[in-house]
Image (cartoon, rainbow, N blue to C red; front, side):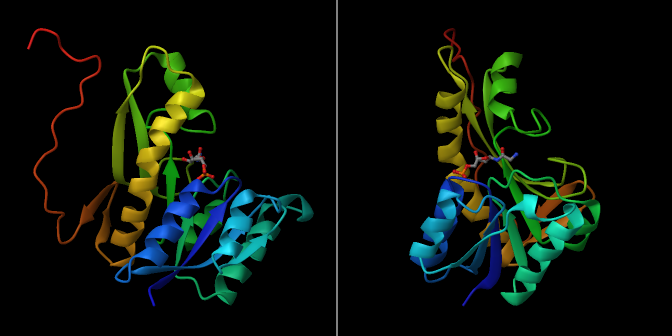
Length: 221
Ligand code: GAR
């Protein structure tokens, strides 16, 4: 049994599925998805989690008088299912500084841009509008300021001339599904150490530096 982890979602749940596949498909995976919570009770991700045999709870934020009451209900579920870690996987509600402080170092988020660029709910639209040639995704610790906590890992993809929000989102999503299960593995193994805004991985990941991603490619080399 791995470290009990809650996943918070608001919709489709494709990142949640990547986490479930990693946790249920690899005997050595160090985290276990103990519950899934959605602020949208009809989120497809909830149904998918139930099919996978996971406690999946819809908590409509509109049923609570304020953010604190909503978060108290989340906290009660995290305690009920004895969760030690929390993953925000497409969870589209802002969390209060009190809640983020309580879970600091134990709660991570996936965001579909190379932070600190393009924070917020319209990352792909903003990336396309800015003219960047490269975008990607970021997994980071959650801090009180939205999309601004210490960065754990990032993946980059090219932005193509003909891209729409949905074609760029699809290209980034493939990388999200690789990054998020890996980041949770590092966290559950106790290998992530926050040093200010930096995250140290101990022991360090063994790698040779990847080649640069150039977009457009240089025709002169
Ligand atoms: C993902 O692309 C995730 O990065 C994004 O929502 C999508 C959820 O998809 N999150 C944010 O924009 C958070 N600001 P999913 O439900 O299929 O995992």
